[in-house]
Structures are given as structure tokens and as C-alpha cells.
Length: 448
Ligand code: FES
Image 1 (tube, rainbow, N blue to C red):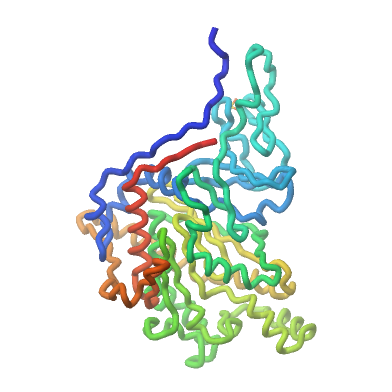
Image 2 (cartoon, rainbow, N blue to C red; image 1 turned 135 degrees about the vertical axis):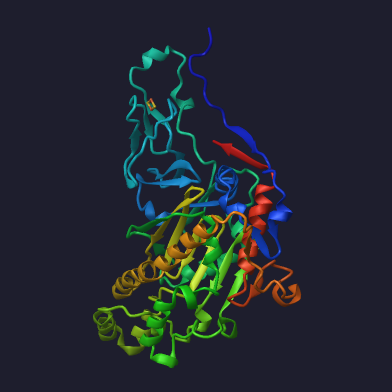
């Protein structure tokens, strides 16, 4: 007699190298268009990049108490992030161990257990199988402890940002982020209590195009003066014509702004050095803000209010963590590829733990700013690029701006960080080098 229900053992799989001529497809100054348009690449990306590398899943503040959960994806794999009663965070596959139905359909909520709607198997929020209807039908040999939800084996967090990987060979998350943590620290450091909170839901949009177009754009200081012309004009007018807010009005390369290309494909466009000493003075119009400012002045005095208001500004930082997390101003943006020609973007507003209430109220107002007035420009450009890529015979996408610069002038040989002027396309070249490097290697994957 065979055992009625074998447990699914943890198993190492090797995602094979993707067989392409990578040196041809990713050249020092151009990217082959097929990397965007070839649907055969998409499953490899979802397996080897999303899951084979550290991939952003959620923020700790989105699981604020025991029993909280959030539904996410690791590539295309459905996942429920949970916090159990001990406070531990789990990344559970949203997949019943019986016949694979999803066990959670709500985006967020709180529960100690999940019951599969198909045949009623019930799981604790740490993944243990705790209930099987009519379990005598399995005989005596059925052991519930062997049939819990499968899980992401490695979950790590940096300053509240929770990542997961299936790859046992990945270095620690902190090592993977490397020098890019300097900007995460700056992002968080504006909170008096050293913590940010994602508690206001998200603004979501879907565009017709490949997900990598988002990263091409995210550290690109070349496009704002043109595709974001209207919002730049508004900033300039608000700040008194020629007196301020002109950091993209003339050649940005003559400003103190800069880009960085970090190891492991991460990138940065840092605008704040070009935005003047007072970031609050560079904030775009926020109608109604006068009441919050007056309240701060009344309570803290002029100097105290100005210091507090420096916690408000929304623009100025674009930090891109390969392959799916972007910190843009005050906001957290998550890139979720749906299929090779369709991508979902979610923007999460953030508040500062311990900040004056007026500061967080103003941050919410500023959070309405770029997603409404600027992201729409970007979405249009992504879809225009995608439409242009239908000209299959025109093979190449250029990314060579600044590639003439000598390593000695841009590259820190110790950290591997390259620092370049803001219109240099080094972050894009850096992204695709890491992309090709990852896809051209075997990747070890384990599910616990
Ligand atoms: Fe979940 Fe059957 S698929 S109980």
C-alpha cells in the first residue's frame, strides 16, 4: 500500500541560463529592442529576476499588528505576506496545498487563519495546515504538519522595506543593496522617529508596454524638461520666475544634480542638490497649505516651522532598486509586470512617524502632485515607446549618452559606484548589464 498523501519536499531547482547572444543584445551604447518585445523572455524574467534576486514585497508598516496580511506577487507567483501572533513576518504562497486554489482574495486585512474556499482546508497565518474537512477520508497516515502552505524561504528587511528571494545563493539583502542604502537612509532619515509609514493605500495605474521602460525612465535626468514641461513651468512660476525651481530649465548637466549607477543594477537621479537650500521653497503649488503652515508657525515659531517643513518636500529623489522598487520623492513605487506588454505601477504615499501632524497632512497633499501631474506624462511616453517598438526592423534602443566619459572620471574603484551628470544614461546601461548577467547564469531556486 502506498502512502496516501506524500509531502511536497523542499526542492532545489536550477533555472537554466537563457540562451541568447547577450554581448550582441546589450552593447555599451545600445540595447536590442527584442529585450522588450520578445514574449519568450518574460517567463525567464519572472523566474530569474523576480525571485532569483532580492525582490521587494511590502513595507513592515503595511503589516502593523499581529494577524495583518497583504496580498502581493513575487513575479507572477501569488503571495500573501502575513504577520503572525509572535510578530514574525511570513511570505506564503497564495496556493492551497490541496489543489492549488488561492486561499486569499482580499488585498489587505487581518486574520489568524485562511480557509480555502474550494474544499475548506484551513491554514494558520504562519502557513501551518490546521484543518482538513472529513480528514478520515485520508486514512491514518495523513500528517497535517507536512502539508502547510509553501513559502518564500528567505525574507529580509532593510529599514522597514521587506524583500524576499528563493535563491539560497544570494548574498544578504544589505549586501545586495550595497551603497544604494545611502539614499534609503536619507529617505527614512527625514522622519524624526526614523520610520516611515505606508498607511494610505496606493494609487494604481496600468500601461500597455514592457516593465523595463519604467527603469529606463526612472533615473533619466534628460527627459523632465521636455516630457514634464508643464509641471516644470508650474514649478518655475510658483517659485518666482528666474529665481528658483529652474533645475531643469537649462542644461541639467551644468547643475549640481547627479546620477549614480550602483552595483547590482540599482540607480539614482538626485535632483535635490539642484533645488536650492530650502526644499520647502521648491515644493510645487499645494492649494490650502497656508492653513497647515500657519498652524506650524503658531506652535513652533518661524524657525521651527521652516525646519519642520523640510520634512514635506515630495520631489527630488529617484532611487531605483533592481528589479521592482522605486523611491520617488516621498513615495514608494512598485513595478508589477503583468505580461510582457502590460505593467502595473502602484504608488504608495508615506508619512513620517513622529512628525508634526501638519507635516504629514502636507505630505499627503504633495503625494497628489507628481502621480497626477507628472506620472501621466511618463505613462504616455512608455506607451509611445511601446508603439514605436512595433517597427521591428528598427532594432536598437540607444543608451550611450555619456558613455564617452572615462572610468577614471566617473567610477569609484572601491565601491563600484559610478557618479555622472544627470542626463548621462549610465544608470540605464548599468541596469541592462545586470539584467543580462543574471539571465545568462543558472539560478538556484528553493521553495520551503
Ligand atoms: Fe483548497 Fe481543495 S483546493 S481545499
